[in-house]
Amino acid sequence: MARTPSAPASDGASDGTVLNGESVGGTSGKGRPTPTRAEREAARRRPLVADTKEAKARARAELATQREKARQGMAAGDPKYLPPRDQGPQRKFARDFVDAGWHLGEAVMPAMVIVIVATFIPSAMIQYWAFIGLWIFILFVIADMIVTSIRVKRAARAKFGADRLEKGLGWYSAMRTIQMRFMRLPKAQVARGQHPS
Image (cartoon, rainbow, N blue to C red):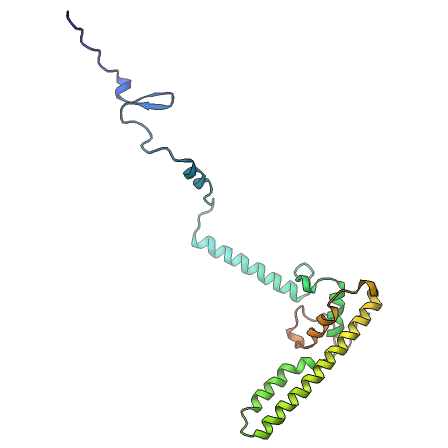
């Protein structure tokens, strides 16, 4: 019985016919394995903007600008930039009350510098009296802090009401008295002698 020669393979099969979206035979195709789900999710998470030196420098410049704006706003007493410790009308009243007067605490740092200089003088008597004078001065500073705290709380009670007085207002005022005026933050908004009403 004679056999008929088998039909030659079709050109489509030899070239890699695509059936149902998949390559059948041949070498044609996308030439790479299908990415896994984890790889596809990782690709989606990549940033849209390239992480370049220019982008980093621009981000640093913007952050520096925002910080400088916040620093200036805090120094000016802008409520939007004040930390929670300095916010509220009572805290502003206490700041203005302290800034309107003169306080011994403003001279604490200069007094300490004088005592440090005195320790370099080769005289035990001068060093001794410098330390004694510093401690006496500190006692007067503490007394001024206490008196200022009492006065601020009394004035705040009269202005805002005794039942609405914020906790810690006296301590807040006392701590401001021992800062040199030009170093206070927020900066003083009133002149000396211009006590708030």
